[in-house]
Amino acid sequence: MTDDELLDQIRAEAAPGDQPAPGSAEAVAEVEAAVGHPMPALLKRIYLEVADGGFGRWGEALSLTDTTYQFSDSPRLVEAYLTGWRDKPGHPASVVPLLEWGCAIWSFVDFSTSDGRMWAWDPNQRCLEHALFPEGVTLAERLAGWLDGRDEAFPEPPAVSDCPACSVSSADSGLQRLN
Image (cartoon, rainbow, N blue to C red):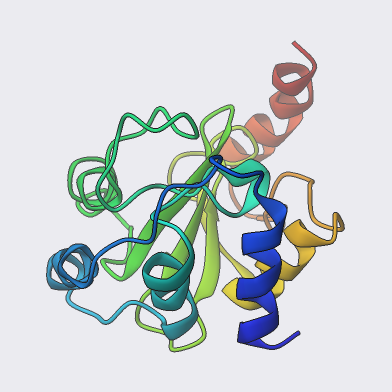
């Protein structure tokens, strides 16, 4: 699927009034300045041409400007990044939150990659030291999966065999998700 096809499909997925208007170049520049990397081109096009948040899995991508819109309980993207993620130990500065899945699970986009490599945070399946992990897919691949319904499962972390804390977290995660 091309970027144009993805943008068209994101537009088509939302019912009228369910997505905010596109964001501003100033809001994108604010995020890029905070991160120190340009926003991946596809993500920038979505924010500038389609909607200021409210797209992606269940329409929950963070907004650049608006925290009152119905699709997210989170702060603006730049605030979520600056106050919640940028200074976490072991968290690469270029890895920026995109949306929350619930159960403390997050999807991130790596701004240091032109194709927007995806990362995830899942403290339910891993210890906090290993809760952040690269997913091996790009933003375009993840969006295509969300749009066609193939990718509704929680992100799957790779196995960490040498961490006893991850083994305990992984064993407990099945119980946590069932409750």
